[in-house]
Image (tube, rainbow, N blue to C red):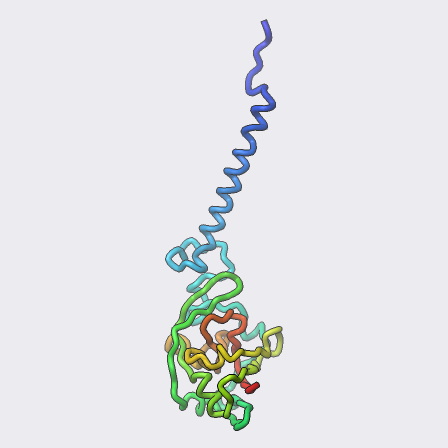
Length: 210
């Protein structure tokens, strides 16, 4: 009689069962990560947004920030000292008070970040088309936008005509009914439809008709 050995002694059976266990573990891990980050883009699941780099509701004025004023090297901007320069066939300069006195328009548009989150907000400001028209810009003009930020690859950004002349594109002064906070681009920032968040220039100080 052959001796009895406890446990599984068939190596082929052992090899057959291991891949299934491994795949089960991987699937569970992927599911957990998906569940804990999906809240970035799908707001009803924001309670599960545990591992995401940004939470849809976290940040000043209930909107996330991926680059603060301090990180961009923007110090406290004085409302009295601020100037918006618009260059073109008919160049002009506006104070913040003059900018706020122009016709104000509203747009509900999202900030869509390359980190994966997206959150809509209520913006109020001056339409880009109105600013360009006053500068004598032709209808196919592009715009170069310059920020007060001192550091970063997006300090100067060019905006194509499809964005510059879209009636929803604003030089925004308010977010959700309140003046912009410094981290959201006070005193003025760009908000345009269907445009990545990194190109929605904050702390705007100059618009140049191209």
